[in-house]
Image 1: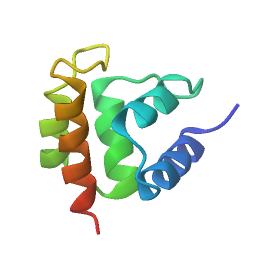
Image 2: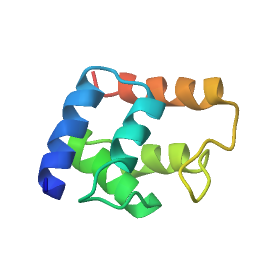
Image 3: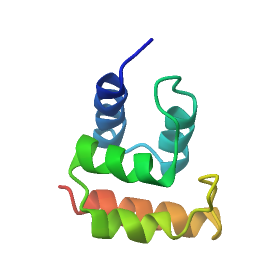
Image 4: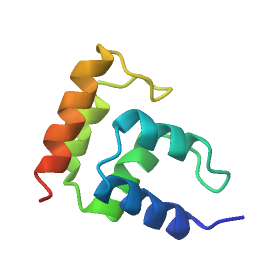
Length: 88
């Protein structure tokens, strides 16, 4: 089984490749070594890409407790792109 550190490293690669948020969430949901909770989501974004918690929190507010978009998907994806664009 992969470690949490390996999941974070793989998430980093996905984010650097400009994956969609839905792709990242699917990846994280299918990892046995990581339960996708709001806290773990914030942790992965911070550890994998250095995304500040303030930006991650804005994104998290668009997701429900099951990590599914509460807003239209295109709005959530636009916010995701805006956030990862700040990393460049």
